[in-house]
Length: 74
Image 1 (spheres, rainbow, N blue to C red):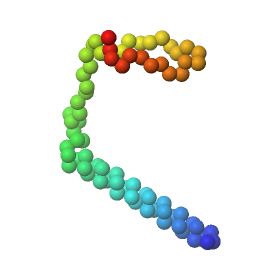
Image 2 (cartoon, rainbow, N blue to C red):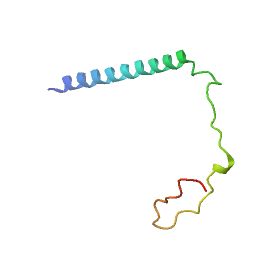
Image 3 (tube, rainbow, N blue to C red):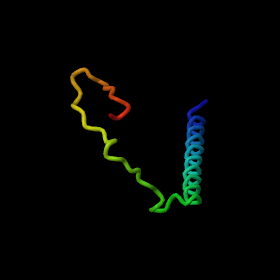
Image 4 (cartoon, rainbow, N blue to C red):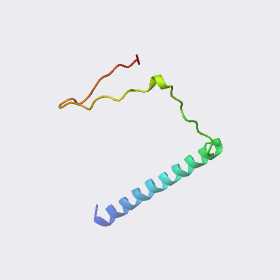
């Protein structure tokens, strides 16, 4: 394969991927619009009770890379 063929193959691959990404983006935007998910009041904020708030912990000690705490709040 000479350089001209390699360049043509590279340009073709780029155009195929670019046009595929463009189509996927348009399809995604169209699907969001059809389902009505693009309205400003279409999302809900999750409410959290005060007793489920995790208390701040002390900073990590030297060589303490992970800290496993209680999974169930007290």
